[in-house]
Amino acid sequence: MIILDGKATAAAIRAELGEEVKTLVSKTGRAPGLAVILVGEDPASQVYVRNKEKACQGAGFLSETFRLPAAVGQAELETLIDRLNARDDVDGILLQLPLPHGLDSQRCLERIAPDKDVDGFHPVNMGKLTLGLPGLRPCTPAGVMVLLQRYGLSPNGKKAVVVGRSNIVGKPMMLLLAEKGANANATVTVCHSGTPDLGAVCREADFLVLAMGRPRSITGDMVKEGAVVVDVGINRTETGLCGDADYASVSERASAITPVPGGIGPMTIAQLLANTVQAYKAHCGL
Ligand code: NAP
Image (cartoon, rainbow, N blue to C red; front, side):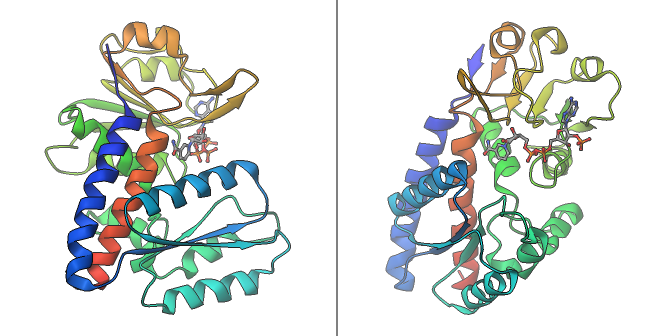
């Protein structure tokens, strides 16, 4: 059984991007710029934003974080997004979710210029993903695809099951796995809370991607012998962080599995950096 080490793979990707950025800066005279907007005091969001800032700095980006109080108005938040859309030194804008109650996150996401939408959540980028056109892809599912590629695990011609249909993970995951191409091309089934016999569907999967947010709810008996299991879930429990898979029993049946933590979490941040470089190159006409 292989443990798919997202932490080490993400570190390698960040180092590669750092080298690429050095070369690009010598051509353009400026570093890629990422603006992060953090509203309110949510402790998990604060940790995520700190990790993103650190990763950006490590790769030679300019990262600027805008911390706004939870009481900020929708109009003020949208004005900040407009200002960042207009700045030439900002290539990417990331709005850390969830926003405090009273703020309309969808409206804010749609306010971000699609070419600076490094989270890939703007309807234009989601539309491009659906149509199979180039664009900025959502970081977490894109990070899953890169991790599989780096381990030489191609879902081409295989049966993939995605558990969860959220806009940020499940839905784009389904689309990326089903894309035409040697590193995708899976036959995909999507499960959700309305799926009657989840275990029966999961047991058919050669590639099983879990994005439910339900701690340890997928057990070994729900997994096909030899399956590749990607656990996107990050759940805070009394005993610490865990995924949606019951790691002990699932790892006895899987041929490969991502740990939590140290799996898809770091890959998501690496993909954010990759998306920012993609946006920067497009802005610089490279
Ligand atoms: P979400 O918006 O709450 O979506 C959860 C999905 O799981 C929904 O589609 C839901 O179905 C489905 N679901 C819930 N219980 C189920 C059940 N018993 N059987 C079948 N399906 C079920 O969550 P999310 O934002 O996609 O996040 C999912 C997990 O990934 C969370 O643990 C989150 O923390 C983690 N996450 C990790 C990263 C990372 O960087 N590693 C990034 C993003 C999210 P319905 O649609 O029917 O409600």
